[in-house]
Image: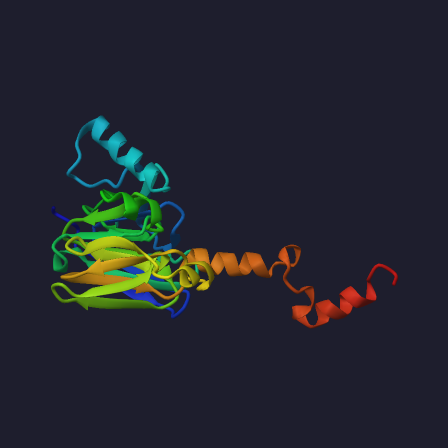
Length: 263
């Protein structure tokens, strides 16, 4: 697919950013709003779709942009091109605590399927599309709905996810079960399905939801330890207006006592 060959370096631990090194005329594409910093001599341009060369004409670009809307992403993407004479650097940051996972698509049969908000950046030429879940159960109860992102090409792509990322290679026929929100990405040959939790008590009071994702090999699976939805729900539940304690900050509890209702 004639992807640009980019070099990169990861920085940080729990709040990572990736620094991409661009040779003259090399380009990287990224989600709008993910830029952290860039060197002088890099031209930034907003485009429809992903800028991959496998879609031609205005209708092709509109179709690609429209598909991105189905995944909850922006109509636009941003390209960063080195128009200088030497090597330049551009950096992209994670939007929440977690890890950035570099993926060489040429090592994964040219295709990765990931959760709809996982894509961060990629070499120009990588196609960012959608993957429709053909099974009704997976679509309704899979945590990601009917639509996931699909990255195709032979270049580098970067995805981000929450907490610690675990990469597991599945042997043919090997099966693992995981919380539906913990799936980050998988190769195209993995069989992805959903099964109900067995037992009424486990389903109602187990705290793990009614369904689990099942992934059967062969293939590679990336799993996150802290889905953003889980993090957001804990933060929301801890807010004072939602039942959380206002005195957990130490001094804040003292101030609340002094400046109370006059009791």
